[in-house]
Image 1 (cartoon, rainbow, N blue to C red):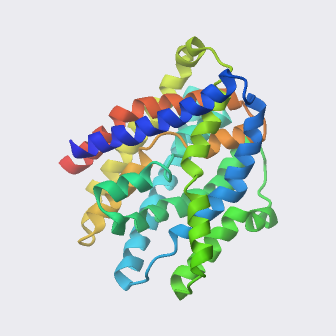
Image 2 (image 1 turned 90 degrees about the vertical axis):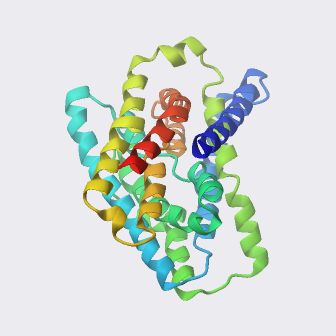
Image 3 (image 1 turned 135 degrees about the horizontal axis):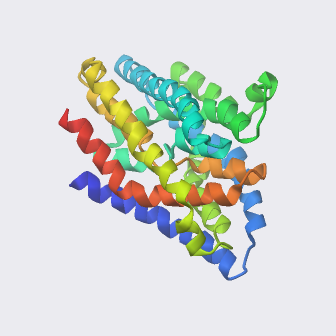
Length: 309
């Protein structure tokens, strides 16, 4: 019950942020096109800061092992999600933006505060396992999927500021090198803007839409059903029936965090890609908003099923 209440609180906060962006466009303070600039700020400034600060924690062997489990859980999720989506797309005819929406979740700005509130701040570290795997895939697989790129440009991938942030973060975590407090505080404050700014962009993108159009898009319901129910349910079964959740004393909690990330609403980054590269940003925003709405029920349901096994 406590988890359900906190989930509702977090999701209501997202709705308020979306509404603020919506009103910016409705009052003609900004236009939908202005959101592209904010998307660039999120992707190339705010996101790297959020990634980097997630690694600035004390190193212990137990934490390293737990982080390894979190990485394993995230790897398993995406190894299942990506080929499953390709298989189902042959049946349902998913277009690239739908594939990306089904595969990638809002694993950062929703899950981090939720884990901190439910399990305690010491568990927030393990959210970075999912974020590491997903960030790498977002800037390789997801970007090429949304932009219809046939090949990866390895040089561009490694020179991407988000991938650089991951590599620097891993080095800082393993070496325990401490950056100056002023730098850490600055990065932390900038990184904390990722949730509000991402939701404001989504609100701006739907600001010129008719509400009837948002709720009448039938394929959105199919995408949300896959993203929020079918896919995470498969992951619950995998974790419980393979015995992975009993591999250590903390494994059950760590994989619970993975379940939360895997069952979260669609990734805001996909909407930002769609906006940045002009790949159906309106439709991407509709799918994102609808997934946030349905997640009020679906996320507590997935957690309940996981804990019942």
